Every structure is written in C-alpha cells, then in structure tokens.
Image (cartoon, rainbow, N blue to C red):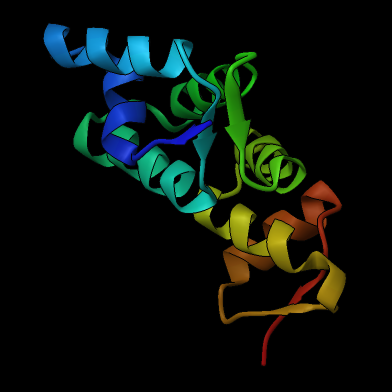
Length: 129
C-alpha cells in the first residue's frame, strides 16, 4: 500500500495535466492507495476553490473516487458520513469535524449554520458555547 497526497488525487480527478494524470492514474491503479482524511479535506477545498468546481460535483467526484476498489480511506465510515452530509448541504470540513467527534457528546461551535444543518440532517448535536 502507498499513501497519496492531495496533488495526486486532484491530478487523477481533474486530468488537467496529461503527464501527471497518467502518472497519478498508474500509481493509484497499480497499488492500494491510502488517502488520509487531511488529503481528502484538502482535495475537496482545492477542487472547489482552485478549480471552481461546484460543491455537489466535488462531493460526487470524491465519493466515486472513494468507492474505487484500490482506494483506501482513512476512517472510511467517518469520511463517507461526512461526504453524505456534504451532499445534503453541509460544508465538507464541518461535516468531517462533526463526523469525527460524534462519539464525544455535543460539538461546540459558534457556527449557527452548522447547528441548523446538523439538526436538519439528524447529525450529532451542535451547540453554542
């Protein structure tokens, strides 16, 4: 197994540089590719902010990527739960934070939008300090 960086995930998904896409494709498909949560998070941000890909398209692309047979996500249940919540409208970073802290009681934040989204989605409680 190998671990891959954000730039490899992005090149694989975007294919904007033919040489780097081929190299990313080969290294991912020829190995089990471990994707740390931080790489998944950064990939979502790069695709959305740098490449200006709409949020839902980014979430779909990351979910499709995560479902490839040779891709192994760090804490896959957490990552997939966060992608589900992001697909339903929650910010992906917030969803990842919330999915990772659910077993520790309420998530405390000043972010009222997050609290509202969490209630709407049946996610763990978010409350203000």
